[in-house]
Every structure is written in structure tokens, then in C-alpha cells.
Image (cartoon, rainbow, N blue to C red):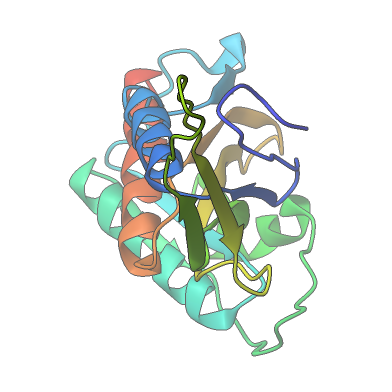
Length: 223
């Protein structure tokens, strides 16, 4: 799909391609607009309104294709929980596979209960937006001329051609789906989705996602 800015977007790992400074400006403006919102979507069960987890143990599990991303996510979520007054308990991650299965949240309830946690925080980190930088190009310009004995005319031609049809480096923007589940009942208490603009600094993206997701949970009265 193409919009007025010449952006090509594909949902579910969307790809944005461009051919010049205009695209960079368009993406900066788009990123600035998104930056004003901490989360893209949020839902809460009214039954758990005012059910603060401050001072309680919260079992933390992160899902991602890469082990490194799961560990970064778990550390960042735990740090934010500590700031909110909860005590994080990290789930064991025994798999180093890039295609690790993502078990249902209910399967974590026995371990969370044994750890004395009253809630499970599950965060899923996935690629959301791919930004392809423009590749190199060259231009051809033809100057004007005048001709004829009594009359004159001029024309100009400008041609821009990408070299090899290749795009430049690709940056990835990630999203996080955070969910809080009540250990006693197995009910979903709250969930939200946050995204970050494409960047080559994945560690910072995950830190931002953890901050935005748990800040939303705080505002929803979960802490």
C-alpha cells in the first residue's frame, strides 16, 4: 500500500522504503507523532480496578525469538517493577533456541505460586516496523539551448536513477505486548501494546518499551 508520502507499508513486519531526504523527514514527523503516545492500545478488567501490585511479588516472563532479547526484556521489566514498588521474580529461561516455543501464561501459574507471586507479567517483544534507507542514485541533467534565426527556445531534462535497485541498511522498530495475569484466578487483569520507531539500538528500544508499558500499568492503577 502506498500513501501520499511515497511510503510503502506492509503490516506485520511493515517495510517502509524511500528515495531521498523527503522520506527521512516524513519518518521523523511520523516518529514525532507516535512519540506523543506511550501505548498504542490498552485494556483492563474492571474487576481488578484499584488492585495495586505495589509491595507484592510479580512473576516476570518475556517472549521473543532471540534469547538475548528475552534476557534484556526480563531485566528491563524487572527494573521497572522495582521502581514501582513490586518485587520481581524472573522466570527461568532454559532455551537458547531462536524459535523457542511460547507457552500459555497459565503454564507459569504453578511456578509463580511457588515463588509467592500474586501476578504474572508477561511481555512479548516482536519486530513491528522495518525502515529501509534509500540506496545510492545518480542524476542526469541536460541544459537549455536556444535556436532559430528570430525565435528561441529552451528545455531541461532531469533524470534520477537508483543504482542496482538496492536499498540501504534496514532499521527495525519493535513492539511489546505486556499483560498482567492474576495468579489466584488465572484471569487477565490488564494488557497494553507499545511500539518504538525503527532504530539500530535494540537495547534502548526494549528499555523504552518496558518503561512505557509499565507506566501505562501504573496509570491504570495496577501499581
